[in-house]
Length: 363
Image (cartoon, rainbow, N blue to C red; front, top):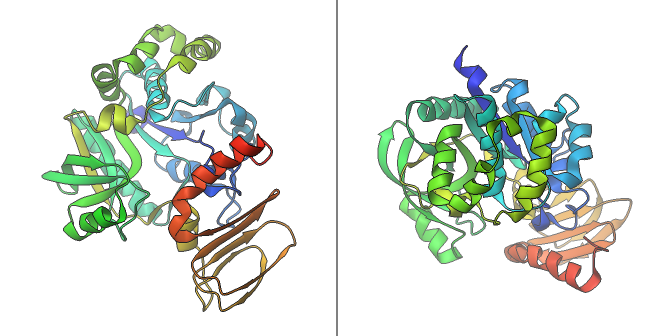
C-alpha cells in the first residue's frame, strides 16, 4: 500500500463566519457561498483543491449538524460516513480531536492535513508541492506542523508564528505563537522577517496529535478515549456516542490547547497565494477594482468622490454614494452594514449585539 492511501484530509466547515455578516448568516455561512463568482462555493473549492492530493474516500468533512444538508448538496460525492456532524460548537480542538480518533480507528498509519473550508489559494500547484513536502516531513518526524504564510502587511486579524532553528529547507522549529497583535506590534513583526502568519492549516500523524492532546489537553482527549476503537468504525454507534460526549467538551482552539504548548511544533514557510477569506477586506484584496479602487460585488453602484470601498448588495437595489473612502457597504436579507474597513474587526461584535437586541431575526 503506497503512502497516499494513508493520507487523509479534514475540512472544517462548521463556523458561522460572523466577520462576514450580513452576507454570512447562521443558516448560510460563508463557506457555502460562491463569493468569488467562480460557480463554486468556498467549500467546493477546498474539496477540489485537496482532491488532487488525497484519495476521495480519505476526505472527511467536519461541520455543524445544522449544515448536513448543505454539505450533501454541495458535495454529493461524499459518503455519509465521511461527514462528521458536531452536535455543538466547541472550537477547533474538540473538532480536530474527534477527526483524529475517527481516522486512527480506521488506519493506524494515518497522517492527516487539517484545513478550514474558507481559504482562497490562487497557486494550487505550489499548494500541492507544499502539502506533499509537509506530509513527507510529519511521516518521518515526531512533529506537529503548521503552514506559515509570509506576511504582506501588518494584519491584526491573524495569529503570528516566530520561526526558530532551520530543520530542513523551508521548515523551521517554532519559537513563539502570538495571537492577533495590535497594529504597532504587527508592524514590528513584519519588519523583523522572523514572523509568519498562522494559516490554520496543520499536518501531523494521527497518532502524534492524539498523543499531544493526551499530554496537553487531557480533558479533550479523555472525552474521545472514552469510546473504544470499534465505536469509531461504526457510523451509527459513533454518532450516538458523539451526540452524548461532544457537548461536554471544553470549547478551545487547537492553537491554545496544543500548538502553543507542545515542544515538537514546526512551521513550513510557504507561498502559494493564500488568503483567509475571513473579512470584507480580504474579499476586497482579492477582487478586481475600478480606477478609483472601488470593488462592486454583483451590484449597481453610482459612486461620486469615492475610493477604496467595497459595495456588496443582493437584489436589484442601486447604491448611490458620495464621499466614502475605505468603507464596507453591504446589504443582505434585511441588514445594511456601513463600516470603515479599518474597524471591520468590530463586525463580529456587531453581529452579537444584533442577536442580543433583536433575537435571531438578523442572525
